[in-house]
Length: 314
Image (cartoon, rainbow, N blue to C red; front, side, top):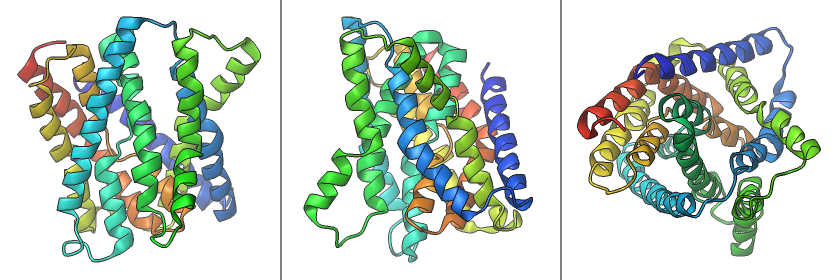
């Protein structure tokens, strides 16, 4: 269990990345198509995943525990932001685009793809529910703090507030949460459309990564010192910190392990998506995501094994 399931999910990601790489090399996909696919992910596909995740009957006990997990997740993000800022400051990383990618990659994992399938396979439906709480916290943070990393310092306050409040991630939560609270099941035509869109999340995001990867030599993935530092921070340091701290919290052990699965996932695809959208250095971002994902074949199962050894079986 500890090694086979995560390794299988990572293998799927790399096959999809390879297909995107081949499509670009064969001139099936160009730069204009890349931006279109990125917008499709941000404005249609990702919100559909969030809304469908909340399509479940209301339960007061689950809501209370989900609220606790959500607060723990927000605290986890706050701590990780502090770690990222301390590790990758201006002195260590003078280049602004590279520093932004390293900080973003350290804080935001690929929990959307890795987290839910792993939670389902290892922890069952309860694990999926608590992973949804992490993804909700992730959505709030990635569209506020995460988006601000790619913003402009001279942006007016009103524009910043509008960008944070009216974006597909926040809007999708505003729609999804009342549906859960009132046990509203979306009718078949709408739920089917959302299901079709949500099913595009993993393949489309990985194809976008593969297209970016095709722009440079794979040798540069392994020769960049900062890419290795970012991978160690995301894949090793952050999971180790939270395995130690979460063991001290008196919360549901299933919820606790669901958080570990989410924080131990490799660098999130949002790093490349945001880099494309904001015309940043996509090559470094893609190298970081690629090496982190490759390393997660070993580091993610190792994190789960360490957590279960320290805490006992969930």
